[in-house]
Length: 139
Image (cartoon, rainbow, N blue to C red; front, top):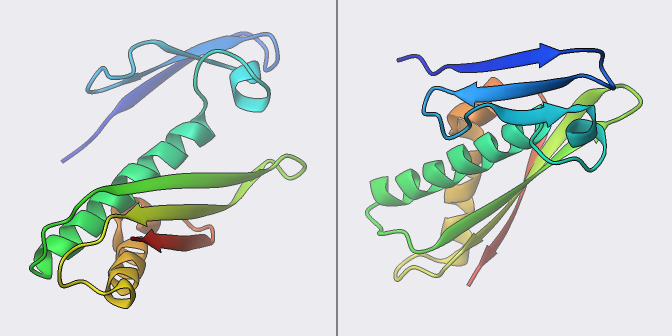
């Protein structure tokens, strides 16, 4: 299986602008620019998209792990916070904040263990070489 995306850029770093399109067309010529990446502009940016991909992948992985363990997942919500070092211009880590609704028969400790496994094994986590941390709220 292959998934594709396309980016187009025109102009200098600060004055230029670009568009990102994904295979699914959920992003279809979606604007990105210096302002959307390093300030407050309208559009998206690569770091935001990476955080979104990680949040989505990880949350699905938690759901899959719960299902494989014989449980039916309730609401799972993940915020992914990507740290970008502006001096070095590098991603220094991603923190995942998972909130899970209580599931009959699943203790908080068991839920946290399942979440840790999902963090280590989700496809996007495996693709990244930065530290990934996790906090879990389970109620």
